[in-house]
Length: 567
Image 1 (cartoon, rainbow, N blue to C red):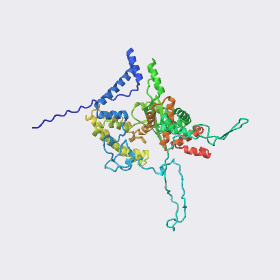
Image 2: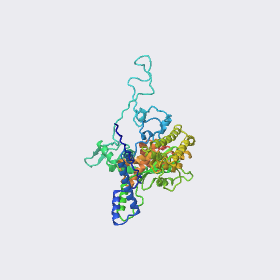
Image 3: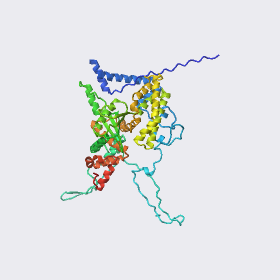
Image 4: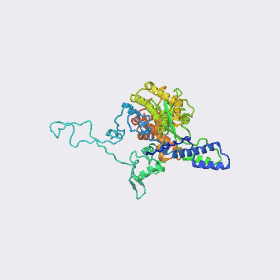
């Protein structure tokens, strides 16, 4: 007697919901809308905000009810994915090949094309640092206590010893406070008859300011370069016996920002002349503007149409240097780019603009050759990899070939013209093949256009010309990853400090971040650069173009030697 097997019920597929459009709204505004709804019909703006809030609630509820894969997707939507490499997307062991989300340059440079497994290499930054890596360390040469060149060998007593070119090295890393202090006690004498007090002279170079340029540079680097909030640094310094109140830190960096203004303005002028300009933005919070918005929402006055606050990142790439700029306020990235390009020389041709396909990145009035980011298009496929694994794998592997080709071009240091020719020969067939495959998916009804995969394919086909600009225009990049990495400075600040208190505070942050990250992009010692700009602020204000991160050392050397600047 055999038992009849129970038919397993087919798993119900979670009902897909449209991802809600981002809506900037606070709890205070939402309560104000509810109060206004009791007294009369809602305005179009109030209705849109209310619909946006309800859509968001419905979307999150549906994702939670779906369980399993939907919870993972929701977690990625909120916190973001740690990596988008193909091996991680499909849960495979890390192996050969190059991902558009990974270090394409290093893998392709080693000839790793993914055709065969390769021994896993040690990741960069996971080995020991040799003595040559400590460029900022104090160096001390210790002579031998008994021997010098030409002495007889104490061992065999026949040969002679000579100094070797590579000395033995010992490294000693010591801890110290981010900001140290020097207390100078000046001896004083007082006449017992006339009462006159005689005080010793202060040491040369002591100055009259309590906080010198090195203090301002260190506070600025920690706050706007490393994301250390003022109150956290205050606690650290207190534990080290050198008090540094948060309010004092603000006073120091605000004064220093005024000295950095000429260099910041010159960076904007240089950025306007770039051949390729990347731009994007991220949300930010300024309490002063939030308070104003809440007051407008509670009053009868019509609030401003623009309620969001953003930090725009603009990276200008030109031959010999890169410039990173930050702008925080109501304006979108495209509007800030318009302000920058207003300083572009009229004789120059239109630059290449790299961004994602959002309209706010091109919302200003300026002329550019627009390229769209392949990484953004690729990310739409990564988001649906769990539901369409075979199709997504095919797309990612095709794009991987393109990134491998770009990595080879960088490895061989091809000129922009040679790079374009190389991509035409090697990447154009891949992209043509990918486009034909995507069109077939829709035309032959293999994919539902309204599904996640269908929307990803539709996005890529709709922006195909701008996504493939690198196949037609010299110097066009593949993606906007450079600008996204730059914006991490602002995101790090938002993550740790949460907000700017005032618009002036946002301006100070923009100045410091622009100077700091531009120096990093050009391989300059950021601390030394900040100190130089402040100590020679008068000279910098007269000729800021000579004090850029890529040439300030020459200006500093001329100033020290007393030589005249070049004509």
